[in-house]
Length: 116
Image 1 (cartoon, rainbow, N blue to C red):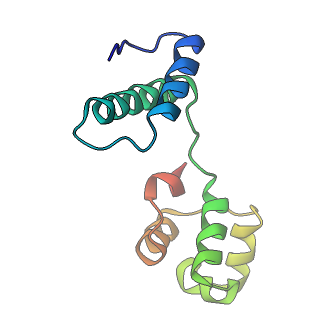
Image 2 (spheres, helix red, strand yellow; image 1 turned 30 degrees about the vertical axis):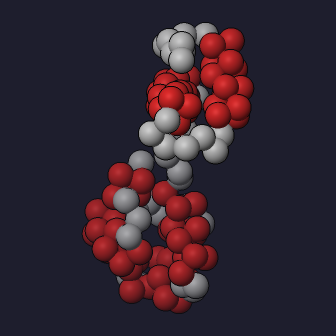
């Protein structure tokens, strides 16, 4: 096991290739330990070089509505009225703090996402 920090794209590619070779290794073996360490290093490299932006608040709401089978009519209890639901979902009105709190509580969407 020769593990080193991932500093370049070449190091990254080699680490990915090695992870693929080690895929399915048993836990608490030399190969299993190497696999776990490489995963940690690759994740750290990816977070630094390929960050994923948080989702758009309105897209997150629409996605959660779809997941939960919630209609625009149902959303009125979180946003105040049918017209306000349309305005918010069509990006004509911004979310207020009161709306964010209500959506966070009712739909379990992170407030960080809603406030972005």
